[in-house]
Image (cartoon, rainbow, N blue to C red; front, top):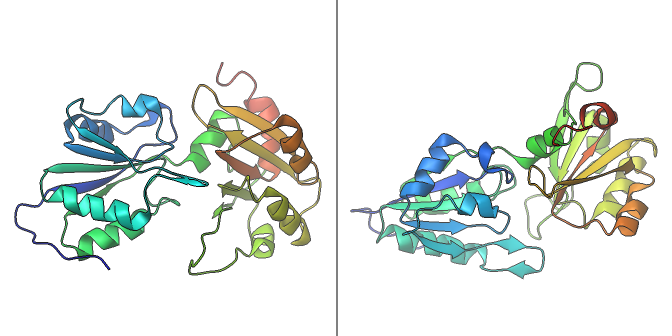
Length: 257
């Protein structure tokens, strides 16, 4: 349960999207906040180049969550934000990508509001758009796809819906962008095929999208799991499923060289 605190002289919390990693994709407003922050509580996937923008006098706290390696539980992070707001003017909650796209920003904002803490969201560029773009894959294209669905491949226990309806997604969108799906890729690819997608449907995995170490793995729903094992391809990665992946061979050649 979130404890309500007095609102007199409370600092303000900014839920700031850091973008996918390339520091050039940080918004001007976000950069200005980092440079003036008193406290920055950041996630694991925020790139070192973004962290380098933080005011050197600011307190920096790692609240990152990676599979099997959680620095802080969600309740602890929220409690920490409330605590810091009582002593500091500008508190930045720095999140990879966008706070409201699989970033738990809505949960944190609701808890802060209930506690009487002023809070503002500063959007960031989400990896589901930026990583494919840097790989030369447009998520929509007039000749290939007029619809795109963003879905998480990592479902939390106790969430509002116990299971993603992969069959409906397979039939409902021409491009599917999957966040945090590498661990569950065997299940996801099988479910998409059971939902009607051809085994030959193209899929791209993009690791560390927009960073210098970005890497891509291109295959089909039938082959990609074996390719991941053979290449020892690891998270973090987003997956793009659909005919737009075919454009990577044309638009992606030399696009980030």
